[in-house]
Length: 402
Image (cartoon, rainbow, N blue to C red; front, side, top):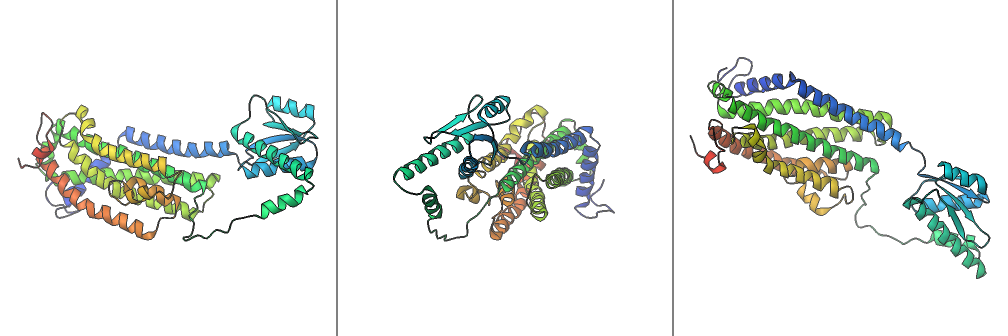
């Protein structure tokens, strides 16, 4: 291996040769292929399970005793509280038996005085309880209106027609459950990929350093070329892994109907997921490579990679804990522009939708501008520390030439 190559001449020829060596080594590893296969099966399996769990049926099945109007009132009360209720007209005895057998979530009967009686097997779920409470309150209102000489139907129409006049200064942002789910899944995938592949870079550096293989390699290539080749090779393999897992999951989700958003929207999320993996990986992998060069033993890797790992974890935690409940959070919005957090936060925001084009351009531009600085910083630390064995090299010492 020399400074030039017929296949890829110039300064970057050795980089590509090192990259292909990394790809071949990792690809031939049964562990890497097994992890990829297991992760793909887990993602597709999760999609299939969600399909059967969701089922597409009603949220609750409630039996009722009385006329059809009672069933309509139950359905309306469920809708008012956000519950999809299937009603079933039954006799009192049959209804109690079906509740006991688990065929009904509850049995409802309204007596002549307007009191709502509910029968449950052990206890009402909070969602069903909210629906029957709304029914009881509505029934009580009807009774009072009737006693005062009014018409309950006229009263209901008047109440239903009463709406505030709202003026929106900006178009409202709506986020469907599918978008929220897709955003969380995107965050999980980018988090796992950065965690796994970033640590592989650091462990690979330490492995070569502790076995003294790095001394043989540096006889043929420059330190920065060895580091860049390692990052490039593992990054390309990680990219392929990401495309397989994300693509397989997206295809399974669309095919099974778990995700009802359009195929174009799903592909848009997958494309941006790949983009942010590439940018995030190369930014963090450079830091992991430099960190790995500071130590000589595998057991010391955890200590040096912990600071950058914490940034990855922090971005992921903020994304999956804040955005699902507050998608328009201003603090998270600003953090998603910063190169430290954009690889984990921006994919989630893109999946949820509503990200202005200028924010995407700004976030991409900032991390692209940061990468050259990280290359210089990581190359200097790596070059000055990778041949130092024994005790952990301090960062300030790694800036000094050997």
